[in-house]
Length: 273
Length: 352
Image (cartoon, rainbow over all chains, first blue to last red; front, side, top):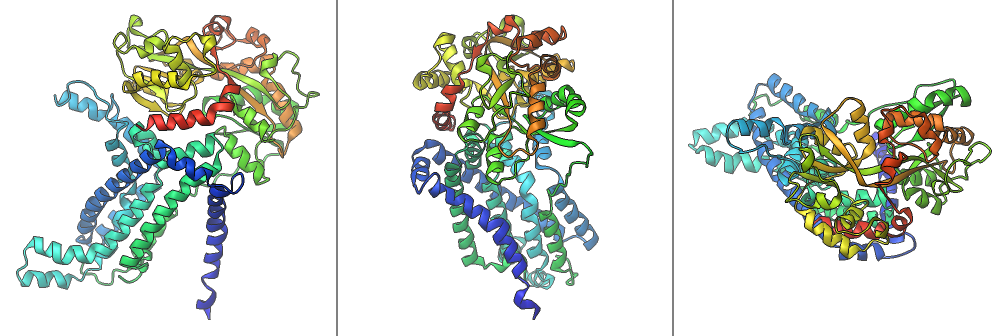
């Protein structure tokens, strides 16, 4: 009976290389140096934590919504293509994930800078009066993150969209549905599970983003991960850093379980929709 | 929708798996007949300078290959010691980090039979570590700004009316609290202990005029060259390295630069302690240290090293008397005792 034990290596790997180290790190939030709630007390009384928590969520929600709209449109378009074209496009989209995040973010620094092509072109066109830096603000951070995260939205959404039976659309046609109705009563509801999976992936990845807000953002885009980096790397205050992580993981877990109760877990693994 | 209903979800899963299988970069050091001694430092120009200055000495006199890794991180050192797998033989510890490392018993005592500390001033050495690089956090300006319009002090940097231009500072309390007090008129020998209220009140005045709060040491020089900002603080070695390459887009103002010290030590559990001690002896050797300075502009505390400097490097080292009298010495003990509190106050201040 293969099925009885086939999950053991996977589970063992997860426990050994994920649950144990993450658990040991999180425990430091209440055990460093001795049993204590000091780290959480200090976390909740500092202004930096609440403001960065707000920044983290505001940025993550914006990124997720923009990815959802753009990702859905791209997935719809790809699904209408002939298979070879669709495959080629999907490969291209996935390949962008192979390019280093740093490279892609620094590319935006070049493009959006005061002497960058966007600023200088806008001046040449007379839209800007003088060269202006478009960096170090929330729009730059959101742009950089959408660029990096959009494949995680397109792939699951596409999986849902391409599974829609074309006969349904023909039926809509023959029954005289207007395009808006086809969209709102057939396409969107049937794509929703894939879209929800994409949103969950993009949102949770956004919560943990560090590099993009750090290099494209200003002080108004200070995120929780940036505070954690300082505590881990500079202050050596791992208990305090673990408290940050515990809060972020707790919030992510709540969202994850909310998703599960609404859509079921199997969607995330890509089993039958 | 595609009418090919046989289009399997497996295609999609394979794509998804490909998405997940990224970033597994494989890099292994090439096998060598010589011993490999690992020196962990700040990376970039300082890594190149380290290889050029000490690589040959390590091969000839210690039968070792010098492998330089980065970045300098006392946090990683702590993690390696806890995991009982110390990869570094020599660790760079910037400013008060060496005190942190000593406090947490991360370092071995220096082997004085190998390392000659007799020419190193007392404030540049202790039982466990020694200063190998004097450097500074200095103000730099874009060459496009006319000479009369370049700030000559932190008070002038704060004066946005008289010295218009886009400004950048590091997103960090270190150095900035000192700059804020200097800007507010505190004499340079009265900075410590830092008065937080006064420093942050002074920072409040400049806050909205700072276009960029930089985080990475490579940013300041790059931002000046790119025209992103006109004035910024920055580590002088980065400016030096680019200036040596012929870059003329910026200049450095030495007045009121913060003089900093970078230390080296041998971690507990280092695999090649003997060779590590030899490496440290080269790092504070006058000739070899001058050679290092040619690459990065940082030099050891032994005054004799200055005699070995080429003419074009001399105006860049902190042991040059003409520069030394302009700089302000950072107080490592104050930062060791107050760094955590300063960071917390800074975090609360910077986000609003």
